[in-house]
View (tube, rainbow, N blue to C red):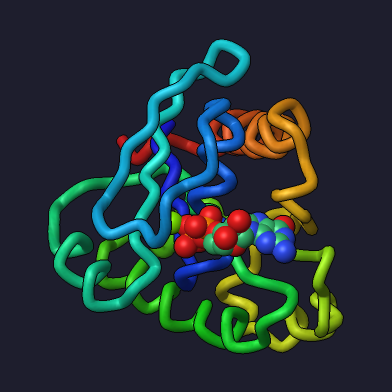
Length: 167
Ligand SMILES: Nc1nc2c(ncn2[C@@H]2O[C@H](COP(=O)(O)OP(=O)(O)O)[C@@H](O)[C@H]2O)c(=O)[nH]1
Ligand SMILES: [Mg+2]
């Protein structure tokens, strides 16, 4: 299962995957596509950690690769990271992956300034995530963060078992 992490720079994408992998804090912004491989309850998972900076993302998104599930990220302390999800959705369309199952992680709940539920309700319904996870990744341990990815993998496995294959 190939998983893409998408969202603005600084929302916590790299923290999410590095915490799961038991790696230390990331050193600064992600400047290139970083790929992590792990096994989640028997499912081989490849996680693509994309740069959040648009110029860097644009060149990488022209590469031809497919993903099975998208985890969108927003920062509860920064309203713009929610409205920019429509930019990330437009990139999913460009990459041909906009119809894949989508999840939303609303991170930095420890410094929450905005009520995430109200903002989420204003997003275009076409972007509706299957589930929303409210997190404070810096205050969560490896097991807790891995539990979120585990839930996502289980939900997607169940979903793909229910969906007819296109041939
Ligand atoms: N306050 C707070 N800071 C966080 C949280 N999660 C990550 N950060 C910090 O936000 C910064 C950006 O995180 P990073 O994972 O690099 O974001 P990315 O650009 O989306 O990959 C880092 O300094 C993290 O330590 C959180 O839950 N709360
Ligand atoms: Mg990063």
